[in-house]
Length: 530
Ligand code: HEM
Image (spheres, rainbow, N blue to C red):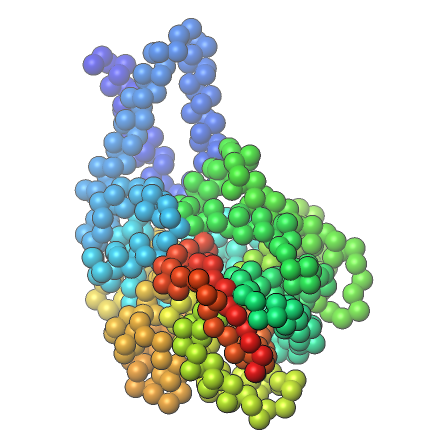
């Protein structure tokens, strides 16, 4: 090996130790690739041959990646945390493991093998502990959201804000839009959508209906209605709106790739025509379109978008035109995805678990029988069994299975006797934590009574956090719960339901995909009038 070859390897090592080891690179990936390609092309141009620059390039990469691997395995400050060596070397290990979009199972198996604190990436610890949510987001924490939340950058919203001050400011409009008073204003529209869901089921005349479809139609039609005053009309037509179907296709990209944001951002920039990326872009374009259309419409009753528009007007002096557009667009994406693709999956899960345990549907029915219709939303929120069914369903199968990553603050994070250093990516997967033996008795069993008559079955309530905690908790929780309670109560009061013949019940949960939210295997129910 000659001197030039040593130089090439050395430059690679220097590039890692001097440059790439510092700071965040997920938004600069395309530039890094372009820079390297430019250097290669210029070298080919200058030397007049391809082979030598390619050879030197390979030696440079050997130095770069060799340095990364050695550093991450032997010298990294997280090296003492247990976990697979592949995960310590690169997050690509995780992408490979999630190729079937079942990150919840990958993480469950890591917990069983390595324990409560697992190194799941070069600079990442996954925490399996009932107190994880409080440690991450509870009072006094100094953590921030991880680079994952740059997924729609430069668009933004509270959920996609990483700096605490930005988050605080952007959350205000949402708090007004989703306050108790505002929810009361949306209730007639929620009832209208629940009625459309009932019509859809009545029209099926005891033939099987695909629950995965109808509940997603309900959630998206509803969000269209009270976020943008627009009816997507899926329940009426009994078919997917083309773009909403694409939204699902776009989100499915997150199944294998969600754990590695730089790879997704690179894909967005370099492969815009790849099918998943095209669907993603169509989904974001659709959210923009909904907002653009809404900006040109006058509405009689305020919808969620009204609050976003007011907020932009109020802050027009602080935000330039591009920043205003990015905020409106980010808010639109957050309300469509965050509002619909959580309530829909939660309903799909609840009806699956009730069909498995019909005795609880009957108990809810008993509880509702003497209540006057239409159901009052305050009364529904106080019913023991109905709310216990919701809680237990969200505990056993939370809609947000594994999402939610943070970066530890300047003081790091202390939990039990473990210290996680500052500037480390951390996560706490709900699917595993809400089924931990140390937090719940008979953790994998569906026992709604633990939420009202048998509290002794709950050992550590901190492990239950379907909506998150603290100042970053779900701002749409009350709206989501109101929708879900009304839909569940109205359907149970009118119908008995069971799995349709031919449904392979075991595969509904086994096939569940973790694509930002839980996507259960497809199943059909037969609804029969009481
Ligand atoms: C059953 C339904 C729902 C579930 C299970 C759910 C779950 C969650 C979770 C776990 C978070 C924390 C995410 C994180 O930090 O990464 C969150 C945040 C958020 N959710 Fe929900 N959500 C639901 C319904 C809704 C609805 C209906 C809306 C709006 C209409 C909404 C809007 C938001 C927003 C804006 C945030 C970010 C809050 C912030 O950072 O200040 N969610 N949700």
